[in-house]
Image 1: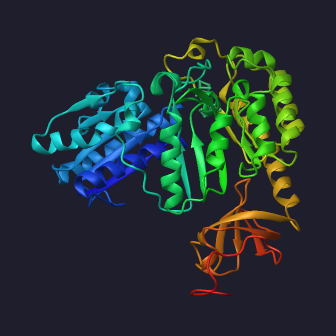
Image 2: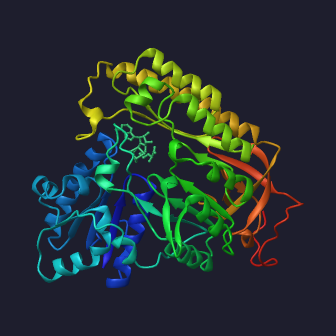
Length: 454
Ligand code: SAH
Ligand code: F3S
């Protein structure tokens, strides 16, 4: 079975796509293909966070319809948040679709495909059977030195603009034991960096044998796992960011000096209308608390411009907040009304042209600070996790700094999978260049093997 899975949206979707592929590989010895012409099964793992993401679903399905006319045996599935939101109406609008599967039931994918192969039929499953999903997913098979680990699902925050609580359901945390087992298995297979995932990851409260533990405790446990060198977690909600979690930055050197910490807006009035539950000064207090524990930490954020009722003054307050925090590489979006969310029924008088201008100004400011961060790295030494050889020339080692910058370094292949200290020598548009620091404390795992020194 040749399978093509096309993924849109967040890291959670990437995790789910990988899990779906593992199911198909175990059950049908499936292989991955990039070509829809060669595929026996195509799956669109969708995102509905903004209108644009949703529009892509039906244009892609239009292309796949043509392929199904040529190959009537082709099985077409839609998964992810659009599946969850639209359910069987997807099949009505795009009859090319054979099955619709919500994000909480992807573990039933194998059975659905088997059923279809026995007797072609339309199937829809967008139910929310709590944590069952993780109990039935095959063990992840890492293909590199870093891996996502989903530790909780769903969101109870109900920010007024956001569709996630409706498509991914209530917050459910995986028990400690399950997460630890997964990370140990990943470490045994060469993974050095884990990214603990949740829509609202710092609301993680996992079952322990004798009670419940929070994300700070989980980080201490994961830090103790041999082989794991780096820990990230996304996405944090400022309100749920506790003192204990900030303290983990002081105690656990494996936690990276980078945090994605979405603020959305710098205006208290807009933050209230968004139902974020904090104001600009509370956000800045959290930043100060985290910096106290890890002074050199870099922050990135998400911003929404043009939320209903946003005035020029509100927008200026967002710009001021960016000046205060000086964010590293961040994401920014024009507000997109999502059907069924409270904000979708708010009056919105700001013309799109004004929203676009605001977005351009905001992105210019963000670029100013992210460039400043990159330039401030020149001449300094940073730990870099070497992930492989660079894709273009295959001559340089390619790795990442803790603040997610790609670095190219001349060196030997046996550094792959190690965290080494790199002196940053050059700042290019999308990458940094560097050389291995001579006083690097971490040596490569083996002495010289097939050296490709350049
Ligand atoms: N759980 C995360 C965010 C999930 S969605 C949090 O706590 O912030 C990722 C980002 O998409 C959000 O941070 C927000 O900036 C953006 N987003 C969500 N809904 C949106 C909408 N309706 N219009 C525009 N951007 C939106
Ligand atoms: Fe969305 Fe807010 Fe949750 S942005 S994912 S409702 S924290």
